[in-house]
Image 1 (tube, rainbow, N blue to C red):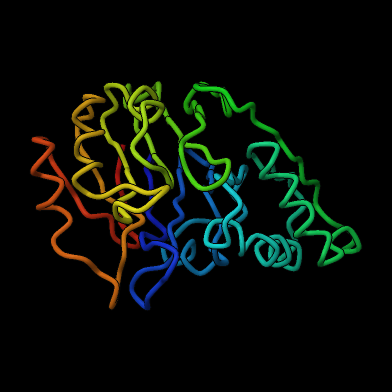
Image 2: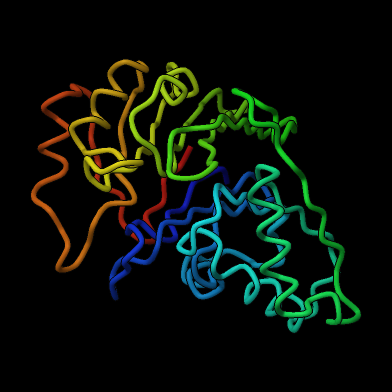
Length: 251
């Protein structure tokens, strides 16, 4: 099965119902994890995904709600007997900071440890991150508070595509990355520096020609702000859906 699973849809402040934003992409037996703000193992189990199937972890940027759970994920995979290699993808700036974080835990002393490969992405639009017959992923830098990437995911077998904005202000790079995708997952944290409102996300979806818009990385709990779907529908005429934890989007 080919699908995207929303493991968390909340912004940096999680709730009992909304974990920090992170997603999983499943194509056949392969699972690609996007971000790791908290340990995703419980969410993966709830979603019925085998943690042993994680082949790649994409780290969009070095903010705690996107990378803070990585040391615990690696520790648990090791304790549960993982031996298969794991690839960590991110911008050079992101990976350099990740390595410093891991070094604080003396992770290289955890022996015998499975191979971990750090795969640095160029800060260029439509950089190839993964190129497989059934799954192609590209990255582009976007406009946030520190170096960050958005993603375009193509599924050649299904002839479908999606894009994920990650944390960003509205910017042309996202529009270009999301051109004519079937699904655009766009953050809707609000009109603050480095972020996007639901109305602005609708504008981006419309300009990109996206087939549908899923709002993600939005305020939840006591910070929730109004009807985000209605707000986005003011600027985008296609389907608008509010992403929820453990939502499955079948490709």
